[in-house]
Image (cartoon, rainbow, N blue to C red; front, side):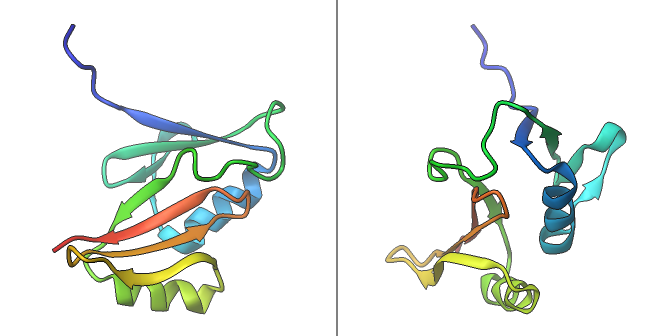
Length: 115
């Protein structure tokens, strides 16, 4: 079987408006049809779900990784917005930069700057 491409991600939430507003303010996605958020070609649909808690009990299970050109600048901008950092920006041994933050539902998001 040929591996199918990953086309999109569904991010279920109990509060669509709050979560969409947060992603708009922090990561400034393009808006596609039918409520899709476009992050550089990867579609994310934030959808109302009755089968999820208001806060993610296992946020490390799936992490949205955003690759940035300048991690320090991205962190400074997000600090001005007042995001919740799980792991502050750090340089790893391989010369890559990582920072982890949480969205209002407690989902983890990583900023990654590669060499």
